[in-house]
Each structure stands twice: as structure tokens, then as C-alpha cells.
Picture (spheres, one colour):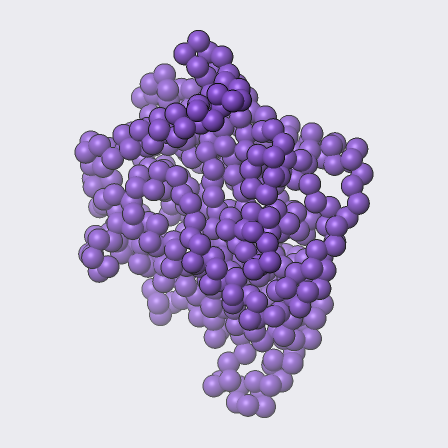
Length: 429
């Protein structure tokens, strides 16, 4: 999994309590690194808080802090309701369906690609052939722009933080692999998915090592920091919420790798080897996206109201992608991440438009807009919020662009230690 991927966060939003989906940027100074300006919306971290009082009025500071604490409590009560026996029974009943419709999306090891298939292999080429192939790889890599190299590092670092992700799935009730070798369909999926994901960091890491364009010691330190610092996931034990989150993230990951492949390919930087690597990883992520999207679609069939409210819950709060805590060792995680997302937006590897497109796609896939049967009042409000959200994001995109043009900010030069302190020029919010 990479940043969406799915691996970027949008700025905080606040909501009008009486109108589902009416969101606006939070006040200046809110969110990671104080991002509150044009590029704040390039974070894949939407947070809409229902701040209504009993009378329907929106709370304001200083009562806002007290209200936030209450929202956290109420939010936890909401997602914990999904741990009720009747909700978890839905997941247990789905196991035969997972066996038939989800597990086949994993490829047998014998039919899977391996990193050695995509990079020079000394055992197959011999010493002279290997040296020649490496020189050819380095020559192609020399033409890749620095901003794409920075995005590639972030993709690789997030993939290399794989130990964090199956541990997250193993916190989900019912579907977890309790012993590490459970025979359930759910547990076998988690292990098989992790095994396929493990190749992604390996192949990207090896390419970067062979290319000679990266300070690998600094990159490796970043990997260690990200695994050490972990990640934040809301509703950490609820399969409903967890599968919504991963479905979104897997699609975002596929888009990020796919965009990178396009930008470094024949019509971009001309690095065919890197384009093939990123395209191959993107294809894996699309299969994984299909699996998690199918699971959520099945949850919509089994309990439409619970599924609808779970999707809205996830979208109203932070969607903390794995890169949220990425840290170059010089800045705080949020401060560095603010710089990185500006670079990624500018490079085109993953943008706010991509985020909106993912949401629109999932709304279509799950039939959110047309769904009416089986919804409570809360479920209908959740549906209306979700259907209005893409439009709100688009409006924020347009307004952010207009503000950026009017501000006429000067570009900032940012030294990046991953690429030997070469600088990236970007307009920061």
C-alpha cells in the first residue's frame, strides 16, 4: 500500500449540522503543519464534524474544544456499535462468499511476478551482463526529474512499511488472523494479500539502489521511522469501517503508481524499466482494490444502513494514509508531509482531482446514490452527505486554485535529503 495512495490527506473540514455534505475549510492553523491555504485540500484527510448543539446551533471556540471531546466520545460509541454480535455475525456469514469471490483474486506464487523478473538478475546475466544491464538502467534513471524521484521514494517507503498494515487488519473483529496461521478464508486473504504486497517495496527498493540517484541511507532511515511511528486508523476494530478505508486506499495506490508509470514512461522521462515496475505494482493494487470493493459491496447487500453509515463515518473523519507520519529526520512529520504533498500535487503523481475521482467511483460502485431500501434516518443522511461530497470537493478545488492565482506566491526551494539535498522548487500553501 502506498499513499493514496490512496496515500495523501486532505485538510480538516467543518460541517453545517443541518445540511448534509455542506463542508468548508477549517480555520487557519488547523490540521497537520498548519495547512490552511490553497493546497490544504490536497490532503486525503477529510474531517467533517457534526458540531450541532441540541438547539441546532454550531459551536464555536472556546466551547469548540469541549465539543470536540464530546464528538470523539460519540464517534467511538458509534463505531463500537458495529462490534455488537448481530453486526459481527454478518462477517461470519460471509466467509463462504469470501472463499468463492475474494480469495481467487490472489495469484498463486508460481504465477506471480517477482522483483528479479523486473530488474537485472546477476545469476541469470553473469557478471558482465549484470554490469551492462545496470549501466543501462542507470542511464535511463538519469533522465527522471527530481520531483518524480521524491514521489517514488514516498511510494517505496510506504510499501516498505508493510509490517504496520496486516497488524491493522488483524485488529478487526471476526476477520482477523488470530493465531497467525488460521484456516479461515478471511485469515488466508490477509496473509496472501500481505505476501503480494511485500514484493512492492522490494522491487522499488532494488530499483532505487541500482539507479544510484538516491541517498539510500537517508531513505532507509525514513522507512524505519515510518514503521516505528505507525499510523492512525479510526474505528480500529470494526471490519465495516476497516474495509471501507482499505478499499479507498487500494484504489488510490493503484492511481499513484499508475500515474508514476505514465510520467516516467516513453512519453515522459523515458525510463522504461521504472515504468514497467510501477505499472506492474499498480496492476496488483487494482486486484486488491477489487477485493476490498467487493467486500464492502457485499456489506451493503447484507446491512445497507450499517454500510452507508460506515462509509460516511470514514469520510467525515481523518483518512490517515500510511504516509501521514513520513519524516525525513529534519522536520516534524506533519511539517515534512505538508511539503511533500505539495510536491506530489505539482508532479502529478496523486492530486486532489484523483481523490475526488476515487470517491465518485466508489459511490457508483456501491450504488450509494440510488440506495433507499433498508436505510434509517441516519442512513439517509449519511447517503446525502456522501452524494454531496464530490461536488463540495470540486468547489474547493476551484476556489483553492483561484486563491493560489490571486496570491501569486513565489516558489520555495526545498532541499530533500533522499536525493542528496538537491532542491525541489514548489509553491507551498
